[in-house]
Image (tube, rainbow, N blue to C red; front, top):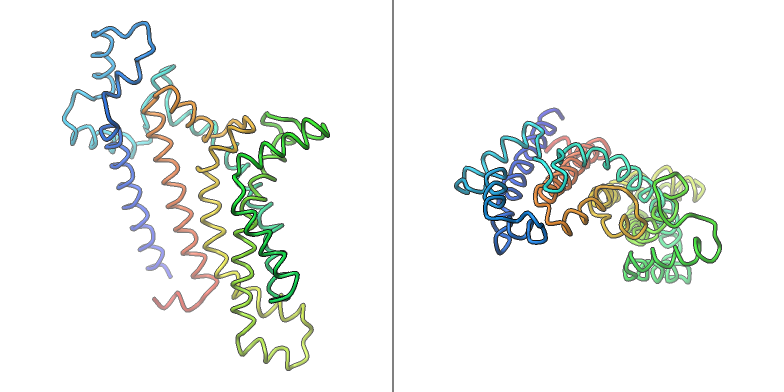
Length: 307
């Protein structure tokens, strides 16, 4: 068990270092001169100011040295300073991270609350009308763009009914974005729940449990739920990791002050240090969640401990 955790930690650390190096190279992959792009609309964009900016960002150094310096600073917790405002990138990201984390948890909880019961309903009614209806809902949920669904939510619940505010960061403001994210991802959770349960319910031990006279809810909750959760762990973990850094559109639709909205503002302002910091934070969250999924796999499935 400890050896498996040590291997996962080694892989996670190696992946994070690789992402830091790639994000450090990103500024050189972007076509054109980044300093010119960042200071194009500035009235102080003199040759001397641009040279000072290039020196402050370390862009006058060889590429390999820039990447190594960036890696060294990031490993020390220093993601640089923003172009607009000259504020520490790490501090700004950490200030917005709790809002993003709260929205991710609320969105995931909504998706699980809706998706898992729908998956159960489809699995126990396989081939019937209920199964078909759930699959149609799942297809619609995957197909509908999240930003369009968010705008519909605002139109209905905020503008017409007046039940919830349009934007902000209070507890009432989280309802609409969480519901939008939940409805978007509940379709994926429902499909995965159905597939996992259909596979588990076909096993011999399920037929044995039914032959012993157990009630259907006992068969489902006691004998089928845990094996099905093993398949659900992956999709739940990956959805949560994506929500931590990928809910950029929803945060901007609802003006939610998370790191996604901060990243969009940085892109519009050509603030490359902030963009690099967002990439590093997003990739790190995905790697950490993936490692936790592997450890949770080991706890749920004893066979994994023998590998």
